[in-house]
Image 1: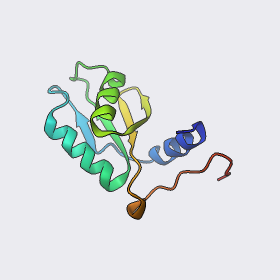
Image 2: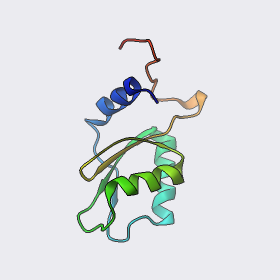
Image 3: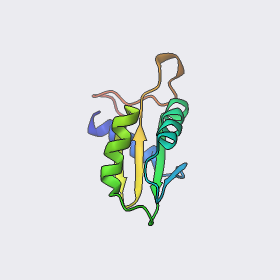
Length: 102
């Protein structure tokens, strides 16, 4: 992912509300599955890490990204933004190409 594409995804994520919260129990297989399904449906999601979660948000982002085969767009404070490109026939977000201006 290029810096331009990452910046574009960050701008889209700014207005989004987190749709998942990671709490005291941290990452469970059920949560991983739910995040994967949400990425399938939306491509771009925001996750909030609650104060009672002992794990570092950046480390959590790495784990979730690896398990769901998604890319970390950004981690700011206790918010994680993930992106996974949709299948060709179901793409919702069209990323700018390398030389393209938006």
